Length: 132
Image (cartoon, rainbow, N blue to C red; front, side, top):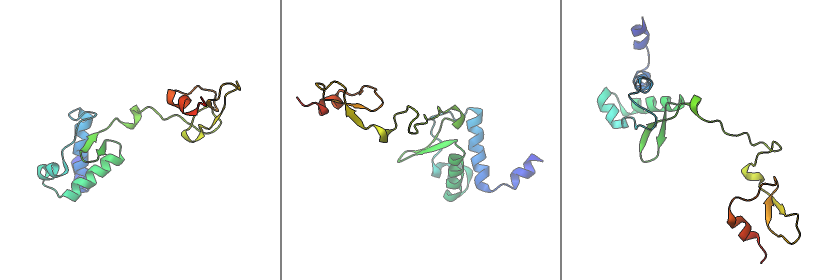
């Protein structure tokens, strides 16, 4: 029954599912390069556009990622990625657009500090803002 359902799948999905199966079984691991487009074309006996569709489907599913001038690589599954911090204004985060400086409390000290009160990390920040 599974074979009948498999035969009704579009060709690009059959190719994509084979690569997905290799990833699930561990034959292809995170960071491994998947076969080149032309290499998989020859191996599977399909067109370049079929392989591209398969790779785009795998990319959209989170299995692989493209790297310019290099090819496609197995990526870390979405479930294992560390979520990005929520940096909305007012939650204590330091979003890149909100690092507006204010003068330090001590009038003799004329360096800028972020509005959050966290000291600047790079010494260049203090050097560029000094009045000496």
